[in-house]
Length: 270
Image 1 (cartoon, rainbow, N blue to C red):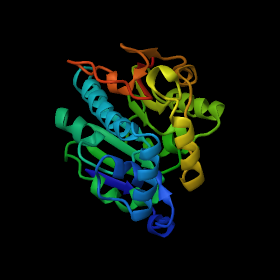
Image 2: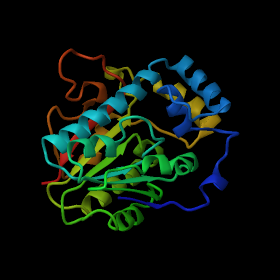
Image 3: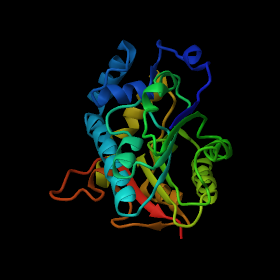
Image 4: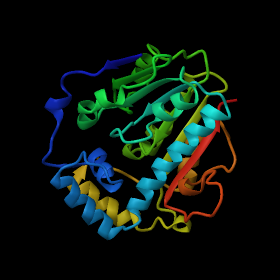
């Protein structure tokens, strides 16, 4: 079962003359859904901050490990993926429904090119549900209201907020968004979150000049935060082991991957 709440205005909002985060991120992970302006800005940022490609891949790998863990070991059957980005291989619904075909997934984004590609996302199992809604992270109440058309909010939900709160420039507002969404889901739900940091211990100093260039040449504007500010998004929740760490190192298994300046964590609502 698949359903979409995608408006026809997506293509009309598409601006290929300015680099856009979803397309540049797609470029960094080797995708094809980007334009020359995205490649140019992507190369410039990567030249200033070469680890950015490692961050992009590590964030994607974290998503895979987190969804596999929650669906496989914690029995989660509902996922609310806010800030979906462009569809690539191993999207949230593909991983969850491979483990449990009855899983229900709602994707949320307001990126025009993601809207254009939404149909590609909507290829879930017959047993489960895969829906896409066009909504802005700055309006958490609307997200919850529309997600409830597909998800049963009386049962646990894994709320995915990977690389999305960094586009909410006011830290208090970002914290409020995370708290409002988690307040709408029941005990036993999870918050899965990644966020870029400027903390030196994970090599984040280079984020600052690279993000300054980004904010002058691309959209939407972005910010990095300290580990302590990012930890505040999890207030009232119980962090699962290993806590808030570089997303490349979260339950990474054998070996010790190099840290990247992007924190990741999974927490459960008591």
